[in-house]
Length: 433
Image 1 (cartoon, rainbow, N blue to C red):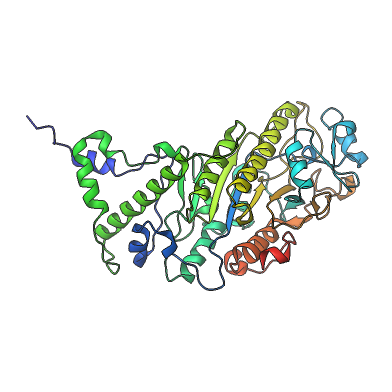
Image 2: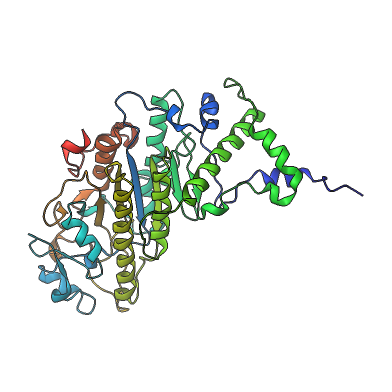
């Protein structure tokens, strides 16, 4: 009979995993193992000229948000002609100061308030040439910043690869944190890999739950001294385990402290609450990625999209209230996008089908603001200027990325995007210099 310390090799190896809803390959690069194992993130500094205190938060609105019923062109007669039952009534549109015929969905009162406070803006008509109307393909295009589909890694991942290269291969294990069921392709780099989880409370090593004796073996493994030059399979496992342990401990400890202000209910608010707690804890994370789904509104769009837009607006506003309370708002720029907009005309089910261009939403104290919060030109609804019934984009999404990279993250956008794009004018130069 085996004693109570007997366990199988399979149990031990299985216990090395941290509980997460998606597999996460920890982030390290050869000589960085000792830096990653040390829980003092201040040791990992960026190259000169690259700020190490700025944070990017990406909100993915999954399913294809209908931009025309979110940022409403109530001054365009064609809008009402194309949507006799689905259009937002002109008297219900939230008017923006100084706007000429453009307003907001009536459920977006919190976004309107943020525009009034000078910390929200909307880029109109964001898209790309030869648009793809498949959810998966279009999302991959946004994630890789490549309409041709030729790049297998994400734009954020490439950005983190560049940060790592500029720092002699050193980058923190929690440089990118993604909250959701699966890490997005956007965060996958050649060497950089994101931390991904849905619930921070279960983002931990579970071997000790399987058998108490595993805990001792795990402690030995995670406190092993791995020479930086060593590059064999055993060193890979040891560094990986150390990296996972550091990420897990930091994140669970940070999230456990909770917010200091009130958040509304909802999926996105819960995610942003965790993000704010990690920022408050001083984690060295540079990119947070969160998601709100439910925007694929082929039928009965009005109430479904309205709930989603209300949740989105309220969650982001609460997030910035929390950042104000903890003194971190000036560090955090947030952008929200959807893989495509919807068709101009409604369908027979009081919904809309997959379309092309749509608005992107920007938040933060560093953005360039206008009284109406609008940046760029709204796409024409004139039937002669549509692309087979769809909007023609007026802003290339890679110009948005270029501005985020060059002006906020201070990473050469040409290296990340593969070529030069004129950066969209979305930041106040005095606040990003």
